[in-house]
Image (cartoon, rainbow, N blue to C red; front, side):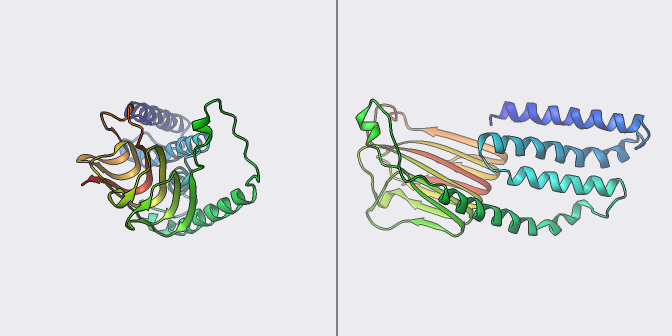
Amino acid sequence: MKNSQIVRSIAAIAIICFGAALVLANIGIISWDLAEAWLYIYPAFFVVLGLKWTWDGIRYKNGITFGSFLIVFGGLLLLDRFGLIPFSFMDVYKLWPLLLVYLGFSIFGSSTKRKRKRKFQFIFDTDDQRANKKIPKKQRLAVGEHNFSEPNWRVEPMDLWNAVGDYHIDFTKAFIPDEEIPISIQGWAGDIRVLMPENVEMSIQAHVKAGEINVFGMNAEGMNREIFYETPNYDQATRKLDIFLSIKAGSIRVDRV
């Protein structure tokens, strides 16, 4: 999501929460004292933002972890404000079992996907070279690490996903074929470390929901941060890497030797 879209979304949600607070004040549920109203506004902001992120996650298949967490957290704060249950902002640590819930759903989802895997795949393409491309190597781990640093390891199309864990990928030790190779590396929580050689053309798109990105010295940190980098001769090159890096919470670092 672009920064302008994020700003518009946050502004729209803030207006919605402010309007909702005015409605509650007008019908006598809350008094319109700014300090007191704020206790209702920011939990409502979490809920609305969580609903939006959840909807975006379902729509674009990016996951609903952070969105659903904000809905639960904001909802509990609102229930406290209305005197239904005791729950404060500092009680957020009590929600750690949700990590187990998300982990369980990720394992269940991965199992379901494997069961639905088709035995046959039909490829219709007028370009024979594209039709003969290798199917990306897919790996789905709940908890674990990916490490590609063996001498002369062969780079192939990859689609990697981790719930919790780190990635370490050293392309300086790899054999990179003379072709365009797509690589997707994603996860919920952890760090991604990539080491690139000087003589390879590449396109890198890195995104974090909450954390830090550093791509060849270009740095971004905070919420919903993204960096795009492309070498000058990427479009003309025959040997090149098309890399997508995404982590929900953690850090991404790409360095060159």
